Length: 254
Image (tube, rainbow, N blue to C red; front, side):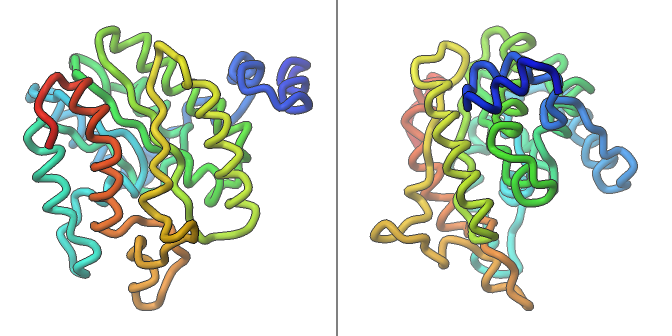
């Protein structure tokens, strides 16, 4: 870690950390091509993009990939959300289970935004940084900043939405880092011309408390830590984002 990165960590400055980004693993490309399913999905995305009609890109991890699920649990049937908000906009799902910001960076540099001019991009990433590899809020911020920079440089006419990292029930450390990260993202993109930040945390709260029914993980057998939004919660996310997304797409609100 160079002096600028150390200074960023000491001062807690998102902008300084962004400048130090290349020294942060979360902001460097990381391939997962050694995983057969991941390689196949990446190749499938490239083939889909070659077909054209990609007006909206949804970039993320399993939370975004889940929009392709049609069960088996009712909480896992996302057809209504996809058909209402995304299918009419010729959306392409670039969500990959387990991905961190580093692997998103690799994918963007290896064809997943080549040859397309989407009207908008929706980015939801960071859960695995905090939970799977335990990169903290500062490092994850640098990764998200790097992603937005790539999108801005390569998709000059595309509008960008950055969603807040979703609340979960994994550990107190993850909770603390999630809140810190979202504060940094809100500060960074408050008046930014690069991207629009939207906090969707309200989709998971009931009377200010985390709503366990907003996740499908607890209904699995055996139950898993609460992380993945249910279909109803994804609907609420989409409804929160919709006014901004429809304005960016230049179409009617869904």
